[in-house]
Image 1 (cartoon, one colour):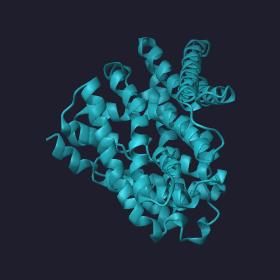
Image 2 (image 1 turned 120 degrees about the vertical axis):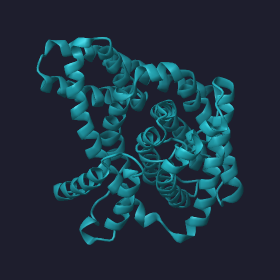
Image 3 (image 1 turned 90 degrees about the vertical axis):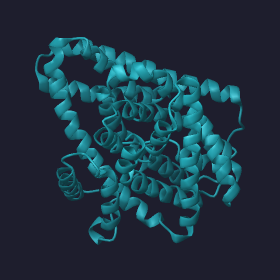
Image 4 (image 1 turned 135 degrees about the vertical axis):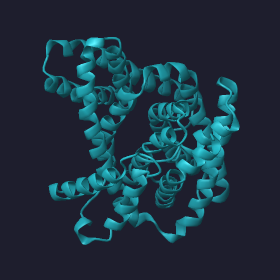
Length: 389
């Protein structure tokens, strides 16, 4: 991708974000995806490619950091049990049930079906959170959806990696080994993120210039991610934990308000710029995989996905924090797929995994992601109003 491509994509993103001044009824990622599909037919954009490493090492750390930094700590405390349950036990149950249903209607093995389920389990409610808030004024549901999304990204990577190894017969499945790996990777990433966030919150006092303090936040976002990855634990959870830790530390110090204002301004620009490029390029990238052969499977799997998420969400909330069916349905519908699912699909494609029908999985997964990003987000505002009127 050349500098000319980047500038043009940013300009298109600027136009779309400018139209979306009220952040209501206008899901920007969906529009960007559809525009990206259109751009794929223009020869100038033929050389634009998106790799799993680009998403994972460039886009995700920044997007996750700003989401975690801006996520209210009080909301996380209030809904911590539900958020963590949905992002751990909930996501595992989701993969098991969805994977079984996929295996019933698809030409792939049960192991391959679980891989598809792992790809389609992480949520990415980038645009729908603001739509829920605007459409209903209910920030509690929006916080649950956003909080779950931040945490379940790390869980989904661990599940996906384990299931790929099983599906390709690289190793057998052992529940104790899986649980040990899961806890080590997850808790290790969180510990590194908390430590880095706390350390930076103290170091920042040595510089009174806002620009240098912002530079330090960039180092924190990517540094915590890279350190965790180098130690073979979750870089995703490390970045999330570091963002929440620095937010917590500055939330306790009134004198740091000026720093938060500068940080908010900088990272909002970074987030919008990265999201504009990311979703436009996703649209360009997935176009070649949208074969008519996959659409029937994709539509059925999309319906399964919504149904399974509602069942699991209802079951988990029934035990942790009982919610009405309206709240559960809204949380389920808001769990649309996005950048993490695309990363997992591209990772599978790059592996050229033997033992599973990877071409079918890639084609169907990309089609389901497109359905999710368009149907769920475009209908989010009316459904929110109907459920919480």
